[in-house]
Structures are given as structure tokens and as C-alpha cells.
Amino acid sequence: MPVSASPHSPPAPRTPAARRRLYWHRLFFGLWFRPVEILDEARDRSVWGAAAFLCVLCGVLGTMGRDSFWEGWRVGPAFALEAMAIADVVLVLASLLLGIATQAIARRLGGNGKFGPTVTLFVVVFWATDLPRLALDACLPGDSVPVRAAAWITSAFGYAFATLLIRGQHHLPTHKAVAAVSIQMLAAVALLKFPAATG
Image (cartoon, rainbow, N blue to C red; front, side):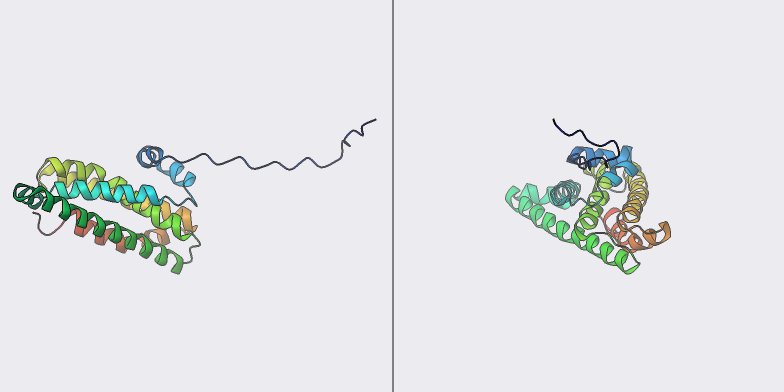
């Protein structure tokens, strides 16, 4: 006869449920509509592809919003596209440097987050929140009221989301998370969203 399990035997260990795949569109739109939940779901996940895609997309939109691009386009489309490609490469590298600096500062302040998730998610947060401004800037003059208003609003959202990201990734208190992102966010905002001259 088969031996039945003892009622006092320990339960069989449960296998952990597989984590749901985090698609790009859920990550991008989730940052706006449920940032706390989506950043918690994205914890410990590296999103290099999403970060690179956003850098390229935002680089294209930012280049198209400049008068110098269209002047170059009238001279020669190939030259204008080459300048856009160079700008995209520079933007990707600069964005990665911002993420790396954030990771280093957070670690110095006592954080314990992983390199890949922190760097890539910081880039995604920065550019996903900047997309509305870039879309307006591509259609309207850079010094117009809607573009300026969008710059202030998206800067505030980007700062808040970056703080939430570092606080969750590195298990830091809020004031340390703010300190970890302040220098990079303020510098990037001053150079990219409120440049001294446009053209």
C-alpha cells in the first residue's frame, strides 16, 4: 500500500512565481500614471535597450527642434542627418555618464543598488519625463510659453521620479536620494531644457 503523507510533515516548498516581463510601453507610460508601482516592479532590472531607444528618440526630437538642423537640411539632407547621428551618439554617452554619476553618489551615501538597473532606469526616467517638452519643442519655438511651461513641469516630474528610483533601488532615505540625483538633474536641466541660447 502507498504510504500517505503524514499530517505533520512540512509543506512542500513553493517555487517562486516567474516575474512578468516588463515591456517598454508599460515602463514608459507607467512612469506617468503609476510611478511608484512601476519603479518597484522594475527594481533590479537592467533596461539597456529601452534606455538606448529613448536616448535616440529624444536626440532626434531635440535636433529637429533646432533651426540649425533645418538650415543644414536645406543645404544637404545627408549632412543634416550625419549631424543628427553624431548628436545622438553624444547624447547616449552623456546620458550614461549621468546615470553612472548617480550610481556612484548613491553608493557613496550608503546605497546598495546594482549598477545596471540604476544607470539604465535613471536614463529612462530622465528622458521619458522629457518627451512632452521635446515633442512641443519640435513644433513650437523654444522660447514659447508652452515649451517653457512644459520644461518646468517635466523637470519637476523627472526630479521626483529620479528620487523615487534611487530611494527604492538603493534603499536610501528620501533626503539622501534627493542628494544623489540633485547635481546631475540640475546640470542636465540647465543645459538641455533651459539653454543659454537656442538655434
